[in-house]
Length: 188
Image (cartoon, rainbow, N blue to C red; front, side, top):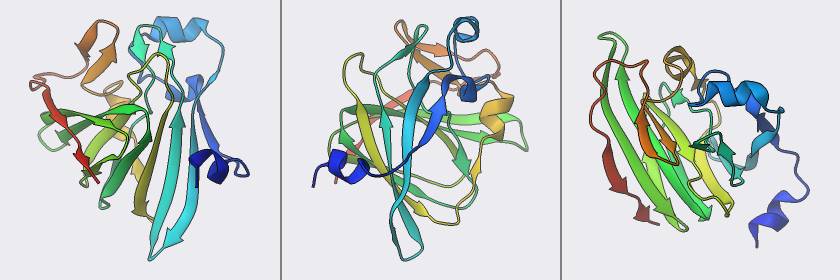
């Protein structure tokens, strides 16, 4: 069954531009823009064995110079598995040690239709649609009781790197940013 058919009778949670707060690269641009919808989250399409299956739809858009992305979060105990259903994605993962106030590792994982990644607990992660013309559709499995923590990304005003028309740009709110590791996802 096509994804569109599955989603057509469901009402999504919508993340708007103003919901992104201070995690955007071009904050001046965002202040001048209307509060447009950026992406759509269809939660709980399937619930099985304590897990929840969600679908997220991220249309192509530039946020000033930055490619559209999710707000980003981490899970304290849960592992989350994402699969690209349509389009291409970049998953930006970072491991931040709060006790040492230090960013330990940053990884960008490129994925296309049919490829998946698994995100361990305590890794902040965002999803980027790096295409100007094509919508990104991805699914994820997560424990139903998993809580999302946005605190590090809010405190640091985004992830360690922003993906822009000019490539990767470091977020100056972090000190000692590790070199960005570039990897590819695996097929299902």
